[in-house]
Image 1 (cartoon, one colour):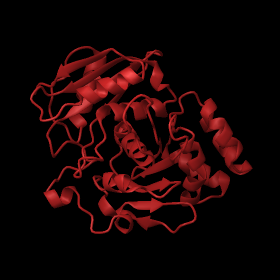
Image 2: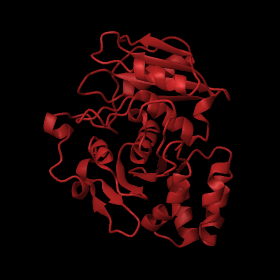
Image 3: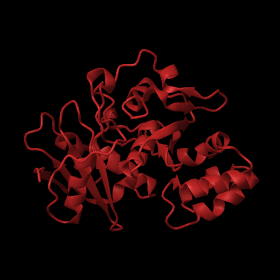
Image 4: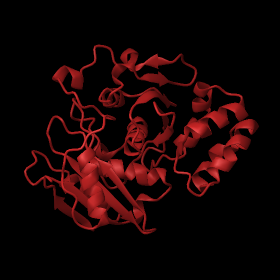
Length: 296
C-alpha cells in the first residue's frame, strides 16, 4: 500500500479495511476502481454505492498535494462505465495560485484521461466552489450530473449552479468526455507522440488552441494530459496540470519530472508555454520541449 493511504486507511471501518486491503496492496493500484472492484467492495462492506463513495473520500483526500494550504480535499468521479476515479487538490510552491488544481477538476480529468465516456456522480468531501461548478458544466453530463456530499441529500449540478451558462449556450456540440480526434499527425519519439495524442483529445472549442503535455519521471514512467477549456475561460485546466494529475494519481512525486514535452500549434491564439515552463521550473524540471502540431 502506498504510504500516503496508510493514515486514512487506519480510520476506516474494519469491514471496509478488509475489503480494500487486497486492492490497495496491489502494485498497480493507480487511484481508481473497476466496476468489479466496486461491486465487491459494496458486498463485503455492506455499503451501497453512495455510502461507499463517501466512506472512501479520506483515501481520495490522501492524494492531495497541499504545501501552502494544508487543506486536503478529496473527490471521486463515478463514471457511466462503472469505474470510479479519485481526485484531489494540488498546489505548487513557487508558482502563482492560478496553477492550482481543485479536487473536482482532478477527478474529472483523471476519468477523462482514462477514457471514461461520461460521469454520473461526483462525490466530494466539501461543497464545490463556484470555479468547480462552472468547470463541471463543461461535461457532457451537463447540469444533470449528481453531486454527493457528506450529511446532505444527493443533488444535481443544476441545484448548485442555477441559471447556468456553459457550452450549450454557445452552440458547442463536442463536450468533455465525448470522443474527439483533432487529426494531428503523430511524430517524434514516444514521449512527443504522447503529447500530440493528448492534444488530439483536448477540449478547446473557444480558442481552438489544442494542446497536450507528456511528462517523464525519474522512474521512467510517462504521463500525458490534454487541455480542458471552459466557457468561462478562467476555470480552464491547462494540459500540464492534467498530466500532473495522472502522475499524482499513480503515486509519483511532481518533483521527479526529468523531461516534459508540450505540443501546440505555432499559430494558436494562446500558448501554454510560459505558464507550463514556469510551473515546471518550480517543480525542478527545466527540460521542456515544444513541438508544433501538424495536421495529418
